[in-house]
Image (cartoon, rainbow, N blue to C red; front, side, top):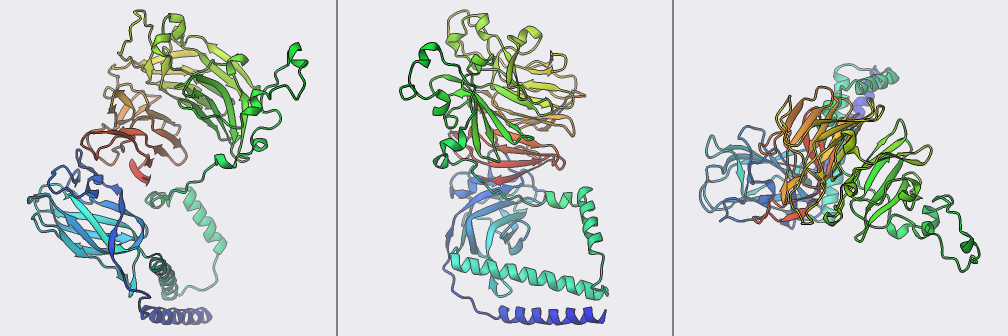
Length: 590
């Protein structure tokens, strides 16, 4: 015990001396402040069209150019992310050209390199007038510059006691000198480590802990706590950080690395072909394709067991495709399974279809396709075929040439499909339903498909509800195209959000459908802002779910630009995570 105390005292003495000496060091260089560039990282809420992105531009004469919180109940905040870490020395708040009851009478500003290490940089308030207010921010900690990557503005009180909070414009001032900032980052990190060690040793000394202990037992205890979810709440409150890794760089692809022996089915030569010499004979089509050519409207499914991705069909700008590929993730290799699935008793060329993979039975199901209006000239032309591909045998099977005749959907496109692996049910929701054009006219009316379930074991279809039908449990919902639907095997809910109903009308509701009770629950109606309010995911967004972690991951798609009055349509590029249990969205990348 005495030996432990002596070591602790010596160690603490060394740390204190070093800290004192380092604290007295002068700054290696003087600051050269300038205007800093930032983006909106996150905010607690927003009302109407007063989104956080509005504060990026200073428009004092436009009353709509502002961020306004959905309520005045704390905590409300907005987080700004600098394009590069900086020593932030000042902040400027722009205002509306007239006094406004929503101006911030009291607020706080925090800063840090990440969202778990904020320190308070300022507590102040704005004058209720039209003149911009500037403030100096605390930029030193322990006599050293304090670097920031995030700035958090937290309103406390508005000039009107019952009014929501409003920020019109924010300008940040600081220095992004790489050498200076990196020196500050290094020093602050070392200081955090020293302080953590000092506090730990102080805690041990005050409680007379010896250096002997059951370290293995502690590790097992921590593992057990982690397994039982003791740390789940803390972990869920940490902001994830995106790390993007390209799987394929087109410039680095090599033919022999992607297409090898047995890459495509062997096609026997005819008698006439056998008379042609090897030098004169053109290479087989499979050897000309080193990887899937560019396309849109295709489909991918992931086989997590085999670490393979399967790609089928699509539109190359001239025609629908029927090639079927696999991509092996560990070896980074493409393999052309079939250049034309129709010739292998599989589906004919198509786009805007959907696929699901049954990992237990090693089967892929394909449903739906888009057909031009001019081709919908007969009932036989718009039959809804349904196919299965067996990964073990490598064979295609047509389940039916018309799902509608079995009680399933008509021919549809831009729908969504999910698999309930436990009960072997496939759920199909939404999409446009194609109909026979017997007038020869270019009809513009749209018909949307409802919610169907296909039971694989019995080969039967069932309609659960039609578009516009009022369900027995829960509020009515509407069908759509370009949406997302995911199945959570833990709570046995379908999670449905996003999509499009009319031209330039993007849906922003978010609801669940329980496959056992058929109960519908709206997590967000797309109008009222709340903790579960879904971000503007738009049309053709992409989403996936991790049932074990109970998290939904969404890459946003085509949407209206809320920052522009004209409501122009554009493609957003944000990555979001929805945590199911706390019902919380987090922006990982914007």
